[in-house]
Length: 331
Ligand SMILES: [Zn+2]
Image (cartoon, rainbow, N blue to C red; front, side):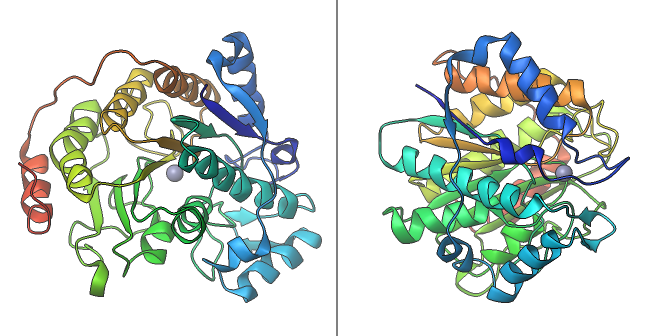
């Protein structure tokens, strides 16, 4: 049975009037899933992450700063405010991702979704930013590698923003293959095609910038012709998706043009790897688009139905294939 990790503390992280990353996102998704009878997912309460799990990725100063800033309801920057409930919410957001990989690495479950906030992919080792406090996916990937017997974790980040935190945390690692498709130039400014990782991790960061207006053909073409062949060659034990939905055409923050059904296709593509898949919620700020896209993604996760379609190799896909093909056999 597919797993859905959630926790009421996701409603306690308050970001203030007008902030797009808001409590209502959870209410919208919950209402949609309720309407669809939870799509056959088994709901489990996300545990709090342990401080040890956090310290495998973050500095102690950073963990302390999140606790102390939350306790006084302070802000890390204009984008990244906290409230007194943020500490607990952040612990469960990271903990849900860790519990999801535990269930997947156990061999019992094949797919799941960690549906919590705040999001995580912008948080760096020692820095909260971009609505993110802890790097939920990175913490869970590190947990899978250090404690659950995984040797290789593949992370696909399809949020419209570059996953700078995950990228930086594993920049020199061969244990994580990180691939991000993101609008560029755009916040946070990182993630050019030329950023391929460094040192031992050279080739293990795949950054695929796309222009504003990019739609399903480009996103899915990059996944089909660049990301999936590299991921197959990498042969991960587990796949994690930084599942943001702000590349949706209705999103007020992102400038891309995915339809709700494009997220279903991206999910079919990821499933075609034949590995356990854990999705972790990142962005997505139009409530209807977010709720519908999460539900479409979960519906595909829960199905054992059709594989993905085929998508064009345009010039941007060719350029990306040439760059990534220096490190991976994409044939
Ligand atoms: Zn985003």
